[in-house]
Amino acid sequence: MSDYKRLSPNLAVAGQIQPGELEDIARQGFHTVINNRPDNEGDDQPSSETLEQAARAAGLAYYHLPVTPGEISDTDILGFAGLMQQSRGPVLAFCRTGNRSSSLWALSESARTDPKTLIATADQAGYDLSKQEARLQQRWRAGPAAQPHPGHSAATTWDVLVVGGGAGGLAAAASLLKRRPSLTIAVIEPADTHYYQPAWTLVGGGAFDPADTARPMASVMPRGVKWIRSRVEAFVPEQNQVVLDDGGRVSYRMLVAAPGLELHLDGVEGLRDSLGRNGVTSNYLFEYAPYTWQCVRDLHQGRALFTQPPMPIKCAGAPQKALYLSCDHWRRHHRLSNIDVQFHNAGGVLFGVETFVPPLMEYMRRYQVGLNFNSTLKAVDAGARKAWFVDTDADGNRQEREEAFDMLHVTPPQRAPRCVRESALANDAGWLDADPETLRHNRFENVFAIGDASGTGNAKTAAAVRKQAPVVAANLLATLDGKPMGGRYQGYGACPLTVEKGKVILAEFGYQGALQPSFPLDPTKARSSYWWLKAKAMPRIYFDLMLKGREWLTG
Image (cartoon, rainbow, N blue to C red; front, side):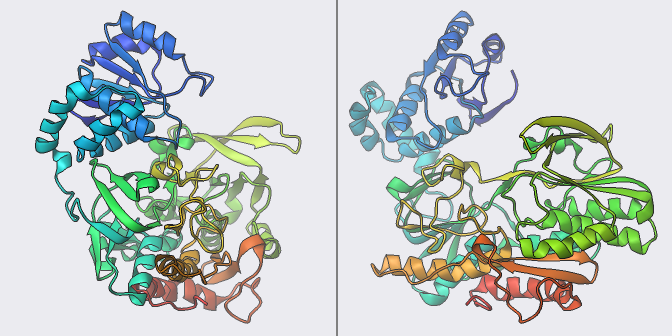
């Protein structure tokens, strides 16, 4: 057993372990195992009793501290802290994926900043920590968790804490400061580079310089905010705090949750190892968008596959944009007739807004694309140049099929970040549980959601953020002042569909697919003026207006 993550010299975390692995765990030097997974969560999950017997046989101490995903309580935190104090290390903690164990560690480490509270409340949780009080006090005085995290004081409570330095977080921070410069605002963001992701499709089509999509994070951070360069490990909205990956906590009066979404590369077997090799590429990652263009240029004949996973995803039109620009290049260079182009869509329709389906179907016919609906990419092997799909018929019957390829553009499945999925802020699907109009959380009145992690049902596009930021800013300030919220978001999203190089169909729509065009023109017609808007104007609007709180076309 070697697939574990070391969090500290005394603790590592892992996904589900099996009884037969415990002897190997002991050989690797661990002395204690903590099981954070409730029994009967999964069919392939051994019972705690079975694991305990195997652990004892291997000479390991074993403890069962079951935690339900998204429901980590103070009792759980105290319990984990107590077990770490009394157990001989190194300790291996596990759950289904290791995420719950990681969160417990981060939360219990942050509790060390206030050991008196930890000791005083332990009795209520049923844990006897009194014997460890002296050690707790000693560790509190000497331990790294007692030191303020770089960029904030342990005693600081920010007026507004923004989680995420992407489009949503920075636009919201800028809009708030524009309205009320006196606010104390901090932005938590670990990355040192900010990307203009809408242009990556153009990069993959040879129409945009990848270097122009990246800027130093420091250059786009709004003036007047404090940048905390860290990663959020957990949300603790009951205490108006977030936990950082080093165990430190940050307090707030109001929270703007804008952590974006994550590409679930491991949701497709073999994808992580296949990307960037033998024609397997994706415009959804900065490092592979240029490889898409290389694959397109190099392909003269053969089979090209393009995939779209189950919704929701970031920019639902992007999988098609990659296909259209590739086909247009092959058509212009008289290769298209020698290339079998197939589009595998996990959904049952070409586009979610019916108005735009007929013009898009015309382009599919022009490019002689084979359409495969209800077809989901399951696995890929770049070395063999093969992909496996699961097709679902009208009766729900599923059948797997194998496809050979010379080029494969993959849109990975996508989901909310773990810190959202396993928090009290998540809805049943794991996304931020926000009101679709006010963007305020449905259960925590001092929390607002913006951007791709929101579960409001709108299209996940940068254009949506442009409309959301003023609503979040206005409603957050109203809540802070104890006044009624006046801002309303109608679900606006925009998808500039690059159907050929030099022409775009500009799809603008809101909730339930209601058209929300910005210009008095037929929205179903491909126009060169919209290409100029997509390739030239929008990047400038993004960097020079939206990220600076200058709210253009937001009404």
